[in-house]
Image (cartoon, rainbow, N blue to C red):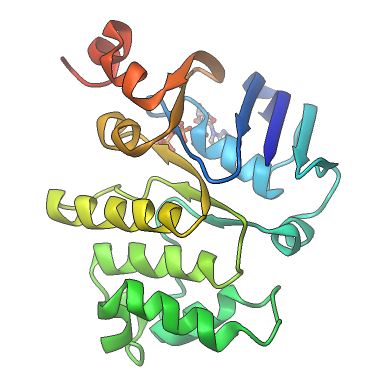
Length: 233
Ligand code: ATP
């Protein structure tokens, strides 16, 4: 579904991604792990089209997308749930969700809304409440739900477990697994390498903007280098 070849990206003259190559097949959960500052967020933002690329090729379902603006990529079926959730605080939960469908007016918005409420019942209970009064975990559910309102084929999740208590991390990751079971394809960025690799089909380890290891999720979890560098084992 997604092919990234030799992708480079920079902030001004500071190169952050160095010829990163990565693929995501339909129906997979692919985890991208690595420490703080490795370039994981930059990679997702470059894929979404909000951060320019300085080299390489991006293709989605066989079509080059590197030249497309962010909104066009959403239209093709790529939606991101950003790091730090970035919900619209003063707006209600439901208005935040409806905004997610801004690029996807296909008459199916109401069904998608109900599906998201079924997945995260607490959002249904709090649909009229301002997003800023939700807990961190609920805001994370809202950010994922907002991305799902765009009816994506590929969901980009940036650090969904960040700052959440362990029970909520489990709940969010269970939702990711449930989405995969429904056929969603997911690229999951996480600093929480053990949790991400445990649910991933495949994973990539990014270090200072370069892919240094890749393999099956379980194989990476068992890899001595991953265990010592990222799992503290
Ligand atoms: P984190 O988990 O902290 O988000 P990350 O792996 O996602 O880490 P990035 O956020 O992609 O890493 O950052 C990669 C590098 O790019 C870091 O050195 C960071 O300081 C730098 N960087 C990120 N955003 C900017 C920006 N807007 N301007 C300049 N440099 C930036």
